[in-house]
Image: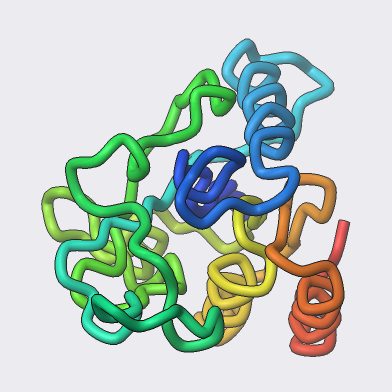
Amino acid sequence: MKRALIVVDVQNDFCEGGTLPVHGGAEVAFRIGSLLHHWSAKDPNAPEYAAVLATRAHHVAPGSHFAHYGHEPDYVESWPPHCVKGTDGEAFHPNLDPQPFDAVFLKGEHDAGLSAFDGRTADGVRLGDWLRTHQITHLDVCGIATEQSVRATALEALQEKLEVRVLTDLVAGHAEPAARKALEEVRRAGAALV
């Protein structure tokens, strides 16, 4: 059994002060950073991970994912511009420190790209292929936003036949009822909520 942690979209635009902020995003970034600090320092109380991975929304021309000029986003199918390639909003939040990532997967260049499994490394390696190559069988998921990318990543990981845990203290959502519903959905699909 080899377990990896994936940190999903802990970026400036998804935290307070960003263009699509999630309440509590900066705090979640800090808590994940604390976990990563203990893991990278080989603290005996830290979880054992064979790898630590991350995703970043990396929008170039995401089509209908962004509300078109002159139209208000509906926050269901269309959103304000966020995590645009090359902007500060795309960067990892500074509270996410350290960043000892074995690989970073960029997603959503030309679409919503919600699931981490939509992402690729700078060398073009897809997440599913990376996990298989490194013989990862168990995946812990944390990050932002619970009802969007965290949910999509957990569900697709289950489809990939991975054992999945969602670290509920290390996620933040846009809306509490939707976040709770998403966590219940992934639990029913077979993920553990820890």
